[in-house]
Length: 148
Image (tube, rainbow, N blue to C red; front, side):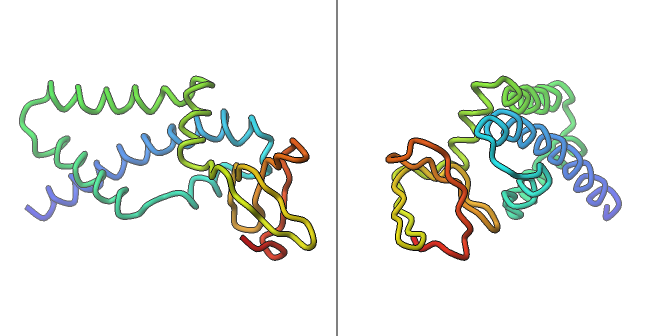
């Protein structure tokens, strides 16, 4: 019983990791690189994981793949999830999903004596990237010097 539970959970972690990898690959290729944000894939991948959602999806996919007795619905669910995640590799879809996850519209950021108003395209560990309405360009600001 314990072995089968462990096997199910590990299978779920494997399937979830593959889905996550391709989701963030599409976002990286068609959102991060498109807007020329200076960021590595592994930082994007690690910083935007929700551990509770990851574990929940892992448990559900593990149960589905190991305990559910009917293979056709299992293959249909896993195949559908895989196809949906692969859609982020299409440029407009990857850009849209990246925007939904990362874009913060209509923000005001104070850095020194200047106030930037616009959309924050990425809020990272050390920098934020804001498309300033006045300058009409993407500005990289160190987080240590800004106020929201």
